[in-house]
Length: 148
Image (cartoon, rainbow, N blue to C red; front, side, top):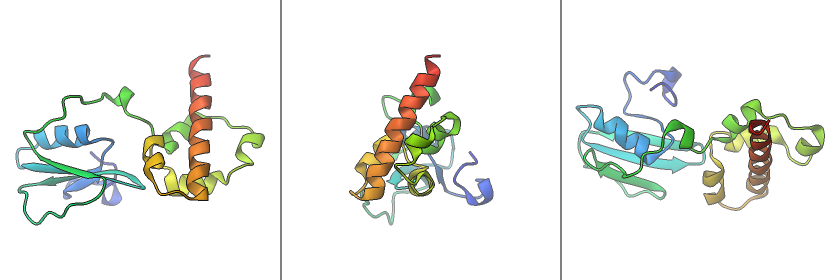
């Protein structure tokens, strides 16, 4: 694990970027000292927290916590995890008529680490609506490239 840690070094941390609660749960189950895991979804993506106990924990919106023995019944493979906008934009080629309608840099700055599903859950704003449109266009562009 390197993503989402200070200077991309997760050696001495208890939290890191995670794509899903299932990934977080599997990570906890693979670490002997981990007894509890928490997964929190934010506007920047998901964060997994690993704990030795379930004390001093506050309830948070868009989060879940379980013991290391609680593994989701379905754990998606890497290919089944929904891509973030950054991942969708990486190989997509959008023409000037497509990107003219939105400030793509602002959308990616605010929502680049989020998946289209996570963007849908955010509060309504003009930038969020633009992000949803960008996600649709990027998904269409990616799907068109895959069919070639």
